Length: 353
Ligand code: NAP
Ligand code: F7E
View 1: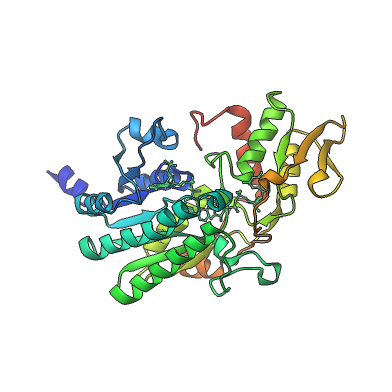
View 2 (view 1 turned 180 degrees about the vertical axis):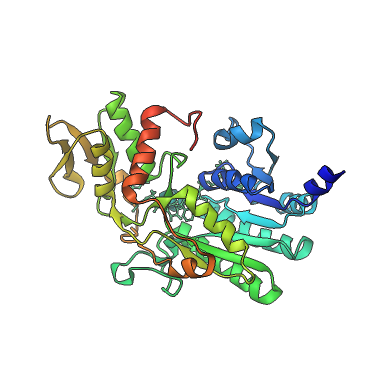
């Protein structure tokens, strides 16, 4: 009986996007905190659960099929789960893809949020809600660096514009209906679990494949884009901490350090003992191995965006003050973590750290 009472007292967390990078780390984190974790998984023709298979196999989480575009599904899930905390991480999250799928991106990243908020308002108004907001809202003009909660928004893609709607509707529902709803304005965060088409993972996988002689070179887009890259495993703790506040708040989570795509490539090659020398300009620029003169990097306009976010670097002082969150992993360490993983495994391997 005691065991039963203890079980009943467990907090319930519902995670949308649990199969993604952040969702999978958050599930690991919340289980360690003794939560009951429920996830929403999209049906697909092949398995999409690689990042959470270790949790499914050991029956540590419960998942239901669902989609953020389906109101009935969301209502049913909330009615059945009655979560204490809801983490909305589901999104069409690729900025470049959002230019090709603008309607769908808005459907999921904007309207999906209002579907969730309405369901919370009607079904479980005491649930705490976390919204995966993004540094893409700022637009990345150099004159706005470092971007903080006070920086004005200037979205530059269908993704960022859809997320801006989500940001405001969260604030709106918080004010109008007194929901506990927070926007976590997270700057880029990466890990071995990062999707293969995001630039960091594309680079560390590419460099590892070059080392394994499975690939000859990497083809990349804008080398001079600058991002504030942190470690995803730490960022999910920031999400949880936000929901432990007494009053809901919107907070920036970032490292405060800026690195260019070019530098990230150099650091990744450095990890396998190779120095890169750059020659040429614009789309004709190439990266060569200093020792052998072999071409390892080339540029293609295929990977440029119609509108580029050039320079993002955050100021997360408010997060430090309000939730005691600070970053711990610097860019060199992040590259090491990702490179070590990709050198060891060809795809998501056993050790999903
Ligand atoms: P991710 O790896 O792309 O994961 C996205 C998740 O959303 C996946 O589980 C995906 O399912 C799910 N999803 C997509 N469309 C859906 C739909 N219509 N219904 C239900 N689920 C759907 O993204 P992430 O890097 O973990 O990011 C998590 C969230 O934070 C996203 O909202 C992203 O926009 C935001 N964000 C990310 C960063 C970052 O640097 N990582 C920074 C700021 C904000 P499948 O596995 O089936 O595709
Ligand atoms: O691009 C440049 C590209 O796709 C980073 C998402 O998680 O973080 C992410 O969005 C930069 C851009 O991430 C390639 O032009 C160059 O300037 O890794 P990315 P992102 O667009 O910053 C934000 C915070 C989110 O919210 C999003 O959900 O790298 N870049 N060459 C390239 N990018 C890609 N993908 N591929 C290239 O070949």
